[in-house]
Length: 483
Image 1 (cartoon, helix red, strand yellow):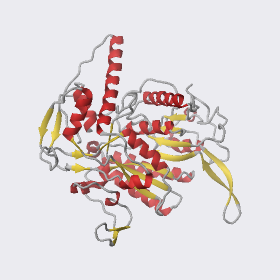
Image 2 (cartoon, helix red, strand yellow):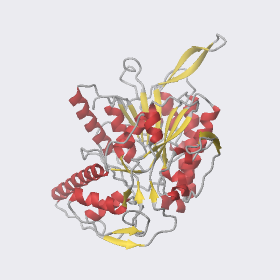
Image 3 (tube, one colour):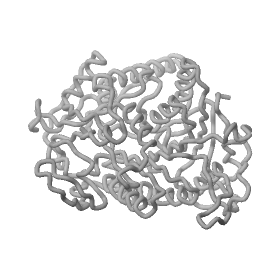
Image 4 (cartoon, one colour):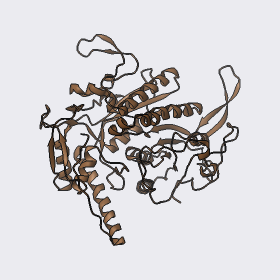
């Protein structure tokens, strides 16, 4: 058993006095040992959400065997915690000493990622003479009914005294914050399958918020996207959070000094994926406005790239790669023949589109900073950009990975695509001032860390092939990519 594990096939033990539970649980597994990756499945594979699909015996008690540990430890719940950004955030939380509950259905990730997280955390703790934090993993879909029972299992029923002096029983959770990553995220796929995207990304969020509210868990970090800015990115200026708001806000004009009231508006949301993020933010803003107990942060990612410098953790989705850097690695390793570059006549320094690339560890650290946001400015909802604040052209991105790999990328030049924009860069001023967060890593470091992960992964694959006495034939094909 790994240090800090407590969820290996243990019986269910829930706090007494809570609501009576149905004798059904969703397909849920908690594990603390390495295991084979499950068979690949579509990112849109839905769980069995009917009662007949549940099995109460498969959801272990997270605290069983620890006698609730000294002081009833607090946890951060990370939903989608084995995905690309989620896994790096979990790792940073553990390095900072947080106990973590990971929920992931493995539809677009692998359980072996958990082993890498544990290895890196153990190494960090040993090097710094620190105790290993607790790591609880549950394989389940956050939309399933078992999510309620999981949240309940980290809840105590305590006696409190209300404003009139009367005693009352209330829920007190050991979950002190929730980071929600679980969402479908392909622009192209969302156009083909909008209902699945709205059901998972929006309806699932509403159900989750209801459960968290019931058990008095009100510190919530939402994984949003720069796509919510829509066509406002067409200005070419750094995007600021006030460019997309959900309730009327008053601000001072930087030129005239005049106080103006800005009204909510969304312009040019070009795909269902972007709209799911916008609608989700709007819902969160409304929830926070209605109940002052909530502290909700929406983090608008620009283009996360790179990986942990160890090479043990990186981006390895089940689905097809469409973002620039993952596709570049496929070209460099012979999995694809060339990269299509869309647009060479943009008003940029080399004619190719400019994007804001940020190291995934900087993104992860942004989530930790957001957990400490105290709801200042009298608002319970706040959005923050997570970007580098610096633009990188497509050609500069290509050159960065060529330098890291000492290989050359074959390029095909193509015209602009409908809906493309020339420049999309974040303003990070708000995050710097209010969260005390700023990016640390360069694009060159992103490329170096990414290639380290690729080389290590290729080396492991070659070792496995040698042991099996087989070779792999690589099929190459040209590819399009989101810049």
